[in-house]
Length: 510
Length: 115
Image (cartoon, rainbow over all chains, first blue to last red):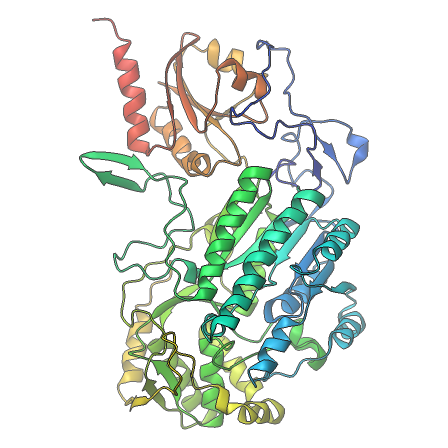
């Protein structure tokens, strides 16, 4: 188990209040007059909120493996009945994770303000996989999976006091922060939308950090970032996992320095991405000032529809958007293939990104929940399971659509409404989740795409795609121009699919 | 996580393991809130192997062991101190690469050699 040797120092059930000098790094640190001798016990003693009978004890003395409160699961040791609060629980990821964690025995609570439903509705789009209202979802979770979810309708920015009261009541041991607008294109529509995204994301997160400080400072915060924060640097340097390793050296003027521990450069590519970068700095600072513990999860582009829990009943399905604002690329390609409109590549279609399937993202989150950071630790992981170009993905969808579903799939290039490099070097590192937290991807792209075709071809979903096909083609230009993108060319798939096969043979999985 | 190959020093064992050691001892004073310290973690393990039998290599968490932190006036992390015969020979503050730390240890020890 990857977290067997973690100790109470990592555990959110620890009570350090008043027992640690929280300004340790020499900053007005309390001076100890004591000299060292061999009989002296370690100074730092803690109490356990779950096991008060232990009294004061050395927090390094008990490992997760040894503690009866931590129980073995396929994803690592996890706290028995761990209290996990999901912010943005009504969303694509939030709902899926709620059911996933509930099935593992966690006590799940969550908040949502239904912004996602409202934003999608405002754009004239809808989720192509129909989802129930929250009260029906909660009833279905209980009825089908025997999961109780404690839900409150709260806006984490404007209703800070209500959120604080809820957190104080639940005392979550892990807080998953999905309550952000995830759309680059939405943030680029106009000034009102840019402000809406930045207000919701940046100020919501900032308010949350203060609330955690004041209520549950030992709780681990898992905040969803994005690989897009890094941009695609044309130097071709690797996209490290948020922080430079100590072996990264800066040479200048005949001298050299280790960059170890410094945040790596960010190069956001929309006002949404800027909001995520600002979040990164706010979370980083909060960890430093208040000893909060956080994982900043730089997630790649997500795709897919399946976990065992959401597939258990139509009322448990998670949403799936395909519109230009909220639809991610693979989900959109499959929807286009199903209703017979060409898959659209923006520009050359040679943009390269990291990707991860919905189910695998849920496993990664669980593994990280199982291994809370240490006090004050701001940790970053790149949460992807493979790297692909847009063109390569279009070929894969086209190939599966043609061969297995007998669909006449075409691919076309359109003008790129975004400001981004169509062609660029890309080397993302994603070693921590596999090496440190034991994650191995379980879902192949082909497998998930096939599953999506099967679901999208059901009459109800196909009809819902048809009903909103006008919101797929991009109209939001980063430049502010108001016009539809022009179709540039239909690609000849013969030979290209063979080339794709060849590329896939050599695809590098780190 | 405490899955390191280098030694773990505490207020309790510092006297015995470091100050009374027959071998020179290289100590990383670190904190869990300190990103540079976390990036040096794997390097400390490599140094432990590199100097096996010649220099003891270990870490001390400054928050869990405030007496030692105070005794050696640690006011920034990571602070690296090379000890020999109970004395702090030299210290540096801030992240370093493995090459830089190896050089620091070797040069400091060399400068202690008799002419």
